[in-house]
Image (cartoon, rainbow, N blue to C red; front, side, top):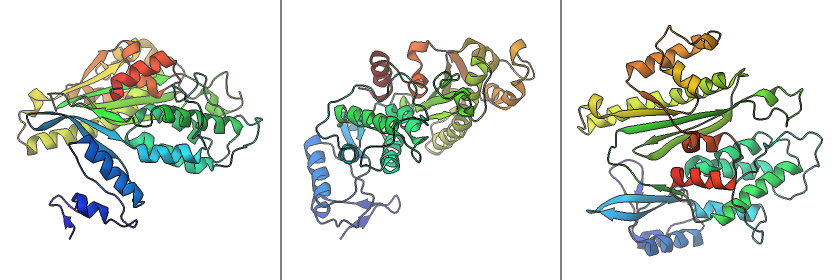
Length: 351
């Protein structure tokens, strides 16, 4: 007697019903205020070999409402560690080295038994749901998952040993009072592979875009990937990252306004706050310049920026300077030292 909820094709479970689930059941969702019960339910599902996606535990309450939610995927992390054969390995404190991962055409062939593409697939799922701190390192390995070398296996094992050290960690969501506050942190790394990758490889001069978008102080969208075109300056790389971020940001703003109007959170225009944090001075100046104006050194590419500069002005978005050390997008663009990595992870994930 499992009943459908009123919100759609989801299922509501009691503890007794959960104990009778079969392995054929797919996505299982539940909430639980008490951590002990939450862990017991998780173990019940795992013993029945029911696939568990994102687990959510309410860790703090105020006036009967959850003020802090922790999202974890420890079951998936355990499977990744087991697939990589790292059950007895030492732990690492960052998910990647500081130097970039290259194609390594002349490197040693693979030596491990695990399937690189299969493990990368698991890591992409994990990084895209509860572990944005893995986005950069996983994207780097994913570029070579169909032609891996020994160096790529070692990069995967570094991610695995980092996950072993942070197995029970995930994303701690602490919503702010202003639920209509949206912040974006775009960043770029100009030609990060140059001098490391082979000079005849066009990818060696590609820059990397990284950004994260927060709604009510909660990460909702993040990305780390190489730019499709070759940027000729830091400003151009930063502007490309800003443009890519805006493509994702503007629809989210419209969606938030629709929710606000539906739930009677008006007036939307006066209460909604959207801020883009930019750490490059030249990109900041151009972004705040109304079209058709442009800065002297941006004429050759400023035409492609007109659309988002117009939108920034029309929507009343604040494009402000952020200190490089507080640029959350930095964790998505390059390998960082342990101190910097842990500082940005604390600001992003809450631990």
